[in-house]
Length: 344
Image 1: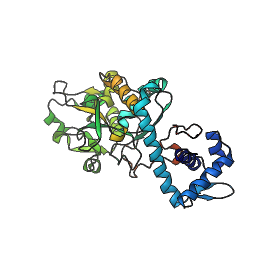
Image 2 (image 1 turned 90 degrees about the vertical axis):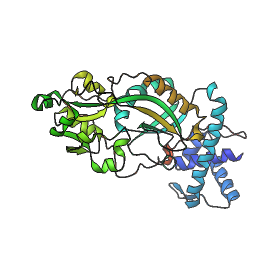
Image 3 (image 1 turned 180 degrees about the vertical axis):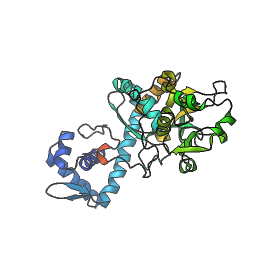
Image 4 (image 1 turned 180 degrees about the horizontal axis):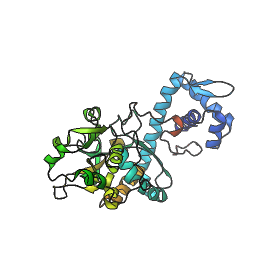
């Protein structure tokens, strides 16, 4: 049995939790799986698994080896993708970091069509505004809005979106519409919390929510959908991305202010590591996003609540960092039965 086959078996044992489950997944006998692990431990001179009558878990050496084995198998998969990805249907996992409002109001509505076209690609979305270390958190692709970061990552533009200052009809009936930006100082303005602006959260989906004319906010939040919900019920004036409130504007739930003001547009773009340049599944997802959002209708939004209900509110800025996926959900292509020849 070649070493790649042994790595696949070891990975499957870790992710399935026992020999029997790994054997069924790989179409092997439990005895063959057990012998493969024993050979691997003997060759490495290290104990990789703590075994008990009911389950097994990796030792410290086993955890280290598991991470390295995963990287090795993924490198083989990506190399094969680069050569033969165009000849077969893309498959595998994509772990995607995306701003909550873009995910809920735009991305969700096109995902079913992507899954229908590429049923073998599994998508996992991490909704968060703050950037994360993509390698540490096993992120394959991040969608961002605004200015591209200064990094060695690859960047691909998906679309662009304007920013809209708007308010509910009920607010405008009660307080009147501001005639100039300076008039906003006399109005209730909804803004991102200071802590969010300090750490750049408000910039993950574009510039700071409020210009200097809008800074005097009496209501603030770290969450764009909360600000949207407050605006809908007449709590004040808000500035949000067009992709976020496009459906509200079309339905009359919110009214655009200063329509003659020059539109401030920013790019929606994807960033991903250079090592995934040849990934067929990543390329398929990026091509699909560009196809759907090159000339977007931001008024078509998913996740719209029932009439009179507030917008969904997600924790755009959770205090705890996103955790890497559990072993059973980490990026791995389904492995056929290991043979003397490396397969993927």
